[in-house]
Image (cartoon, rainbow, N blue to C red; front, side, top):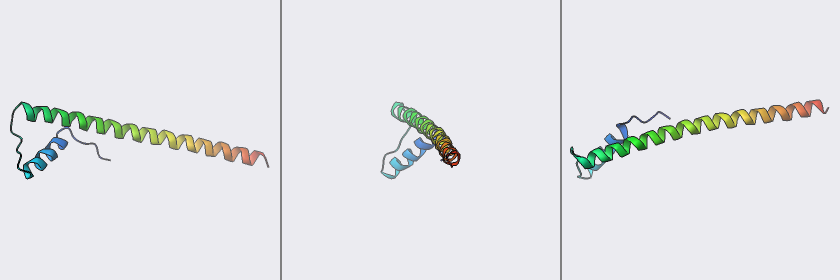
Length: 77
């Protein structure tokens, strides 16, 4: 998955709202929404990175377990 850029989520949401007749103009509310979108993008990116690392670790452990099983089977014959 490609990381989400800081402003990307806000831009998509702004375009969606504009299509629904709601325009985000400068002000406190849009700044707060933009900050929230930035935090959400960071959380998604960190989660995706963690999932990728966890998957790699699981794959390594499964490979080690398979190697051990293969070694035990070969040594018992």
